[in-house]
Length: 112
Image (cartoon, rainbow, N blue to C red):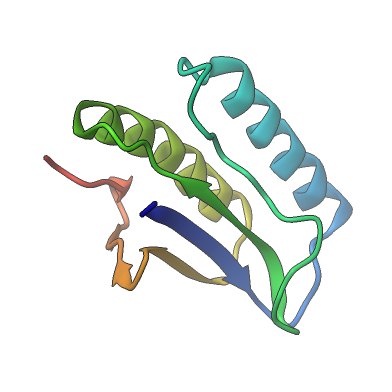
């Protein structure tokens, strides 16, 4: 059975052109720097699933425990950058049904 990280941002106003460009820059930088060729990376859906969602996506986590944390760290750093680039949005980041906590200084970080 696979386990996934899910992320979404919601707000009444759509992304501005500048925010859309910044999201594209963050995603491109993440994909370029992602060091795990055989693992799923940051993935944003083409369409949002809820009416006020302005961004959502998921990442299937590796089966091997020793690979989970490095992949999670990398993806969560990118989700942190996305959150900081989109002000005023309500974010939900979770692994299956467990929320990943937000820390204003650190962002989204899990420890082993």
